[in-house]
Length: 294
Length: 304
Image 1 (spheres, chains in turn cyan, brown):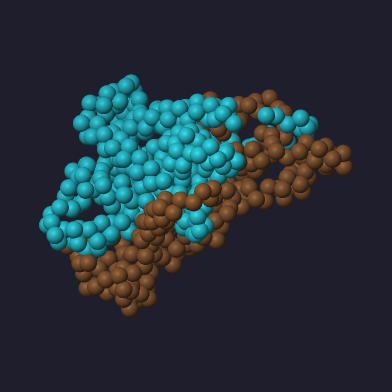
Image 2 (cartoon, chains in turn cyan, red):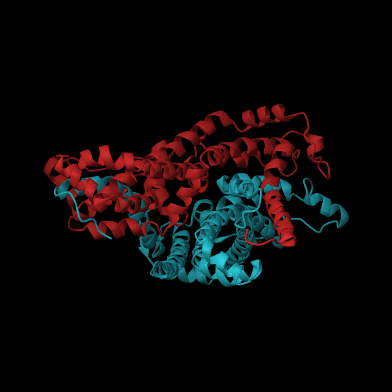
C-alpha cells in the first residue's frame, strides 16, 4: 500500500529516518556482522587480533556433546511449554468467549501474568516449587524424595516449563480471545439454528477460523521460549542440575561471559539466529496466507 | 447465549474458575509468604492465613537488595525506552510513508529485518559495541584509509572511544534499536486519509508542520499502546542490564532478584525473598491493570 499524496522535499524525508538508521546500524547490523566475523575466527589468547579459522568453530561446537544436550533441552522446553501454554489458553479463551455471567473478570485477570518479569515469577515459582518449603514440600512429605529440582534434571525442567507456561497462558489468551471475538456472531447463531451444539460449533466453525492465530502464536511462543527463558533459567536452576536445563541462550551467555569463549559463543549465536530466521520465514509465509484468507 | 446448556455452563464456570485460580494463586502465595516470619514460611504446609510480619519483611527486603535506587533506575530505563521508541518510531514511519526518495524500500527492509533477531541472540557482539560505541566508525575509518588520511594531513591520530557500560544510554539505546514501533505507526499512517494531507498542504503546511500538528495528535492512541508495551518490556528486561551494569549504582530492580535467592546452607529466608519479589512485581502489574485497554491493543497491534 502506498500513499498517493506525499511531500516533495525528500531530503527532509531522509532526515526523519536518520536517527533510527544510526541506531540500527550501531546496535544491530554492526554486532550481527561482528558475530559472523567472530564465529569464523579465533581470538589470540594475549591479544594480537583474530586468526581466520573458517568453519572450525562450528565444527567444534557441533562435535560437542554439551551443545547437542543444550539443543535437546531447548527443544523439549519449547515443545512442552508451547503446547501447555497454548492449549490452556485456547480452552480458557473459548470458554470466556461464551460470554456467560462474570466473563469480564476472566478477560481482565487472565492477562496479568504476562506483565510480570520472567525472573520475578521465576523466584516466586522457585519458592512455590521448592522441595523443602512451600507447596511441593507437602508432596515430598508423603513420598520422600519424589520432587527435587535441585538434583533431578526432569524436575528442574518441569519447574522452568511451569513458570514459562504460566506467563505465556496470559499472552496467548489475549490473542485467542481477540480471534474468537472477530468471528461474526451471525455465523455461530446460524449454526445453532441448524441444530449443532456448542462442541460441534467449536470444531466446525470456530477452530478452523482461528487456525491463522494458532500458527502465529505457535511461532511466537517457540521464539519466545528461546529468548524469554533466560531469566527463568538463571533464577530457578542456573542451567543445572548437570546441564539438564542449560538452554541455548543460557549456554551462549555462560560460554561467552563466564567462559570468555567469544568465538564459540558467536558461532552458537549464529546457529540460533538461523533457527529464528527460519521460524520467522515460516511465519511470513503464513501471514501471506492469512491476508488471502480474509 | 443461543441455547440453554446448563451442564455445559456449569463446567464452563468450573474450568474458568480453575484458570482464574491458576493465574492468581502465585500472586496470592507470594503476598502471603511475604507476611510470615522465618519459621512460618518454612512450615510444611505453609499456612495460607497471612502472618503479621508483612511490613517488617518489606522493609528488610528493601534495604537488603537496596531497592530504592534500583527501582529508580528501572523507572528511568523503562521510561527512556518507552519514550525513545514512541518518538523515533514515529519519525521513521513518517519518513517511510510520506516521502518518495531513492532507497526508501531499502531503508524499509533494513528496518524490517531487525524484527527477526532479538537482542538475546546477538548479545555478545552488542556488548562489545556498547563497551565502545564508536568502534564501528573507527573500524570503518581505518578500513577506508580515512584515519590514515587524517593522520597524514593533521598529524592527529584518530582514536574514537566512548564507553557506555554502566550508563543509562548504554542500557536504553540498544533496546530502542528494533523495528517494533515503526510498523505500528506505519500501519496507522496508511489509514490516515489523503484528503487530510492535501488540505494541510493547500493551507501551506510543510512536512514538519503536518507531522507535529496533525499526524502526531491523531496517533495518540498508538502512542499510548506502544508506550505501555515498551515500558513493560523494558522494565522486565533481565539479561541486558545484567551484563552491562557491573557497577551497583546502575543496577536494575529485576537483576537484584538474584541477591534475594536464599543461599544453600544459609537460613531459608523465603519470606524476605517473596517480599522483594512482590515489590518488583507490583509496578508492572499496576501498569497492566491501569492501562489494560492500551496494553491489549498494543500487544495485538505490535505483533501483527
